[in-house]
Image 1 (cartoon, rainbow, N blue to C red):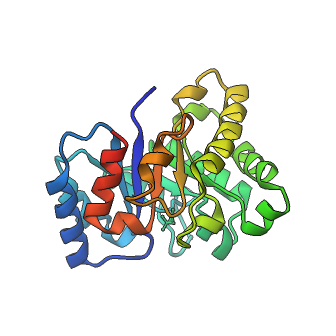
Image 2: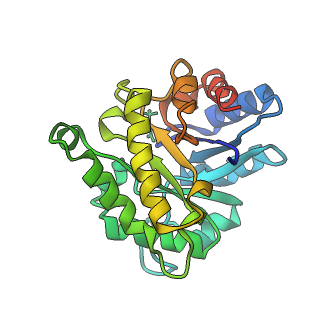
Image 3: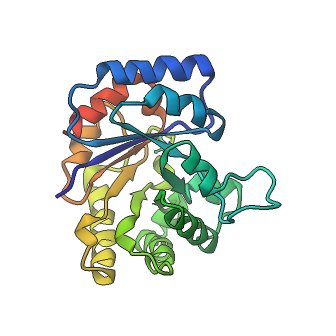
Length: 247
Ligand code: PEP
């Protein structure tokens, strides 16, 4: 099995001063990490964070990417722009984008396609709402969301990262139990296996209130290959503890 991936999602948080302190804290505390690491920062801070991460094992990520190549799309950031700042990953289809910006499965697929075409690895988020879980629709929802990105034109599905993020667990302090998370990861893995012989290479991250206290148990599940971490990625000691748990 390849290395685990621990990716922070800063969301719309940070400032020049706090970013510097956070990244210096992470860099200073890293001891020969055994996993891959990334921080997905606000677009406004890509240049600053590229500089602060130079020469470190921490990769730079973005939180979104436009589905378009260039042109009259006010407020959007193209994959070519991300590449200029050394971006390796871009989150696509985060539930906050799906919920507040109306991103459909088709838009998420177009964004994943753009990212891959431009040489950036999409971290494709899937996950059910509480209402969907309570209605027994978890499997159906995550399978539909994953199906949208499974056959991208000309690109192998094995080039993407998938993050299972139950919407009810994001920023709520409610974590899926390791068993609940593993159950859904197994479903996603089976779907990937049916699509490609390379399924074992695809990293399946868990996200949703992962923190320093629960990371080790979640990361020990057989189909959990890493974490996408929001709140706890804003505190260097907590993020470092999660990185150590992935070793
Ligand atoms: C996220 O936003 O991707 C996330 C998992 O957030 P949190 O860890 O804060 O629940």
